Image (cartoon, rainbow, N blue to C red; front, side, top):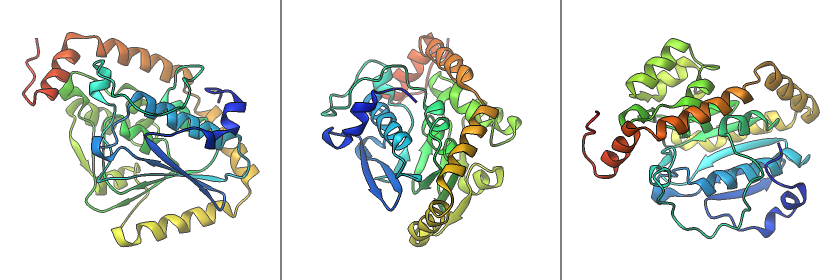
Length: 270
């Protein structure tokens, strides 16, 4: 993992994060998506902040597990479509630009620390990459997971690849092609979600998992996850899929789909 210089990572507290919150307690590094007014949509600089935080966790031997959570009633609505259209919201983040292109799927795969996702809100589109990238997902009831990209003239390329390692390829393709919302109970049946609990016990159940994981050998776990990454190596796949996504985004359908979304109307596919 080499998105940033190691000397920059060591001074993580000197930077301003505008889109996420960080906490490091008892060997657990918590990354909280903090753009609730925008449904935690993935702004380009937000992705940079997540990558910066993950690289810090990668090099910090005191960190034994990573907890991913969010503020607001939507966990993540996916990529910021306005930003994709060139309308990038200004921010006060001081995180530097990365040395290389960040591929979210690989960002999770290359962090050889156990990752748990605490899902307390609906998640859509590219946000599914964050969920699929974690080793354990604990969710509250009545959560929806959706892949609406095709309704915007886009296709969830990298999401498709990440999901194909977890659920059956037929279910993956059907979900991507029809673009529907999936109830969390079905997501659990498919294996995308590990456990569904009542909202009032979500935090306690999360902490139980973290305590069990952090009490085990960090070296054995790190090497095991690194071996798993080598077995399932998909770096070239994610680069190719990223290029394919860029190709789709330049299409007339994508432009029409995004404009229709912004103007709250039905797309007119040509």
